[in-house]
Image 1 (cartoon, rainbow, N blue to C red):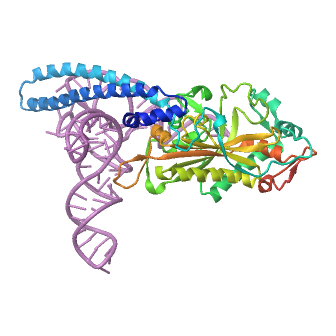
Image 2 (cartoon, chains in turn red, purple):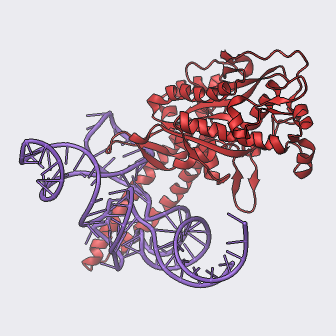
Image 3 (cartoon, rainbow, N blue to C red):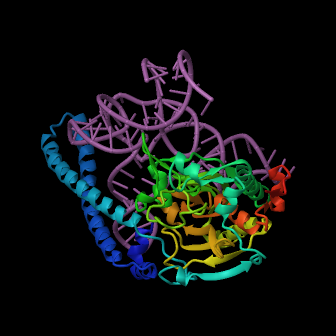
Length: 423
RNA sequence: GGAGAGAUGGCCGAGUGGUCGAAGGCGCACGCCUGGAGAGCGUGUAGACGUUAACGCGUCUCCUGGGUUCAAAUCCCAGUCUCUCCGCCA
């Protein structure tokens, strides 16, 4: 959420930032609502002040046994006015808030401006796509032939975009989760969190999924729960409505969770294989930082995610997303794209974003520099480290052999009972 | 699911409808004291919003939302959460 005070003080800056995202116009509506609201607020606060003063006077008079019925009558009419104004203000605030909650974050200065992924900028590449003396197979064919993936039974159990992992496939999934968690905990200094997979609406608003992207979520009945689309939601919201001590920043969390996405609007895209599922596993990195360190912590977070691909020896590239391709809440976002021989292209396997104070303002996550200092909003960041299903796909495709077997990356073998190859 | 108890500031804890944003304690910050530390003493210590060049001033908030009243932490209603006992359950 943008700061209404920023909009008020610097409307041109906000307008320019939103224009980079291909939207605008709103600023004037926001300003008008804001002005209207403040105007009425001043009036009603004066009336309330009068009520408070007179009420005390009435108390005094009654204590002195003096008649106060004329004052009491006067206050009744004042109260009617207050009630009316309060209602108007409530409506204005609701409108303003609704509007603010649907305005995306402003891009950082160095984010390339463009309407979609065409304007993304490749930052660096690591590793070389493997050369195969045969036609490389897509992971779903390898996975089915090796009896690791069962798409048909996934569909039988649940429907399209659900998959069953079997035998060494299930083991590989679990190995990757543990390998990534151990890496980030032991080498990168993150604290592990295992959160609920169902959260309330406040969490979804806090990180920006709601109110705008309701159709992307699975909502659960009975109760008012949402299935988390990413661990970002529960982990960032851990500190919702809290004021954090300065010494505790930056906070670094790593969390394995299943993730659930409705994939509304993605009909027909990536219908085969593990790339786009309604349920998938992910190890997520989340940081809470001070404003002055978030840029460097963002770079460090990207490197922590890259380390996973490097240790797995999977070729990838780092892409800086354009203003139009970034997520709603992000101020800057790097995607890690892994090489997939079956697709003969790079595909997103991690998305690392700096949200600055956008989520913190929604979720009211603050910190204090000094014991007596005013609270300030933290900056929040997160990135996949990594998406497990897509990592499985990348391993199957990059490590496939001419005979259809798949070699297990060395770092995973301790997690796979020492197995070196799946045939 | 049944029965009961509770929710007050960073924490503990008081609070008869009016002088209560809230006693007291702890913690914390600053100062005094000390060779230094501790103890002791003093002062200060919620947040949001509005207004102001600023110092300030005002409004709201005692779990949340309604209601009664000129006036609510205090009375009434609904809800949420926590705890205890019983039942059920991985």
